[in-house]
Length: 250
Ligand code: ADP
Image (cartoon, rainbow, N blue to C red; front, side, top):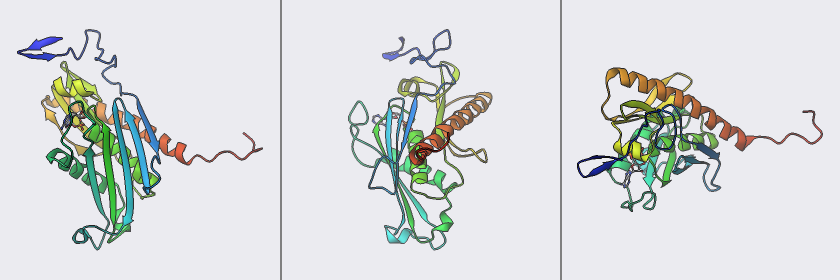
């Protein structure tokens, strides 16, 4: 531990390039995705990513509530990101705060870029993201969970939407920050990528980095997204895998 004033700052990057959990700078935390985790929802997914646990449920296309949000030429995508009161060490005040509202908005807008909403005019596609356990990168875990849940609900999309945060720790660009790295690092930059087109549809940044570091961060994040994309596709394959017919040839 180093110390800055009264605040204890952990050493985020060792001399041999290892992070506090032993990862290299370009390594993701372990990620497990279960498509179709809930029976009630039209589509759902549960994501365990490092110490994050996030559930997403999708309903629709269905009637729009509140009615005045209805659009005649396309579906509205209503996204609600919520962090459970028990999801963090210190009890979080329950309910929708400014942070949750902002995250709900940016995630909803990201999905507007991939969902074929014009196929379902005058309807709503409702996306619920519940963070049950939080350890940084929950909006990215939320995007990943919601994306698999949308696919599980059969909503037509251009592509799945992998997402990851890149950041700067101990002066170096690192993939997929965990809590201590997010808290004590120099920058945090969540992003979401449409793999097919290479378009970024969510990009935010807290902290500071140089132009060259930003380019490096985007490159690392895109690679991370492409790797997560494979895990997302595999989760959907596992969900819809058809058992081979008995007696069929291998
Ligand atoms: P993200 O989870 O997408 O990285 P932030 O950067 O805002 O979003 O938050 C980083 C982490 O800080 C969260 O994943 C969570 O572990 C913690 N955190 C966020 N909001 C709160 C809160 N109100 N109370 C306690 N911890 C929080």
